[in-house]
Image (cartoon, one colour):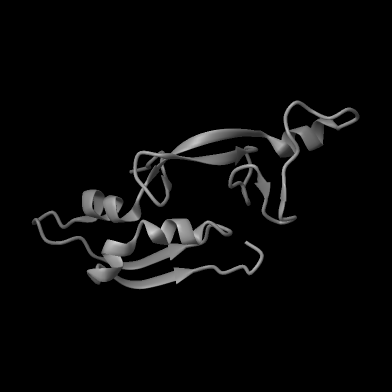
Length: 122
């Protein structure tokens, strides 16, 4: 079932998300492609409606540590320990924060394989 949470370094906090209604790099107030802080709201003089929509707004998304998610939602129905065969993490530079919330699962060998994206600029 869908979860309206973002993976993060801690459960019960929030992470800023740049909401444009599209897909791509939306972590907080930084443009991950340009590696610069996004322009502030309200729109700048002469800014087109298209550019304004691309900027979107910042919303705070509740977070959950992947350790907690695995313990709560992946544990075996027979009460066995939670195990995952494969975990893929591709978050355009937010991976270190996500992995800091995954320490227990890695130490306990609860995940067989982890695939993650690496981008040297983010």
